[in-house]
Image (cartoon, rainbow, N blue to C red; front, side, top):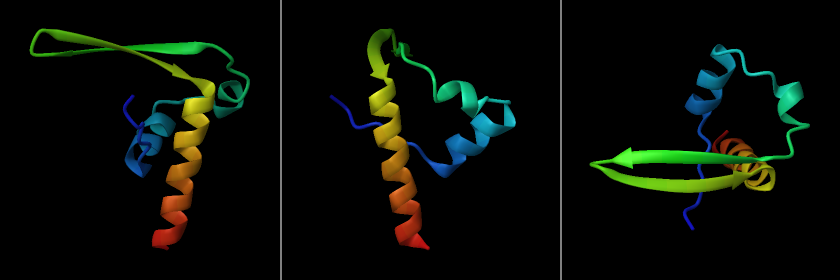
Length: 66
């Protein structure tokens, strides 16, 4: 399984597109991500726990850099 990375840039992009983080906190489903690279389709399932873990890790990393 690949490690998910949340960067400050991806958070800024999400904020600029109007993501409602209040609704995100109550999301309980699984997000299915399909990527197509040179004709090869990869399917990944991302749970809320995985998103929270990646977000917390990103915040810790940002705090260490400051």
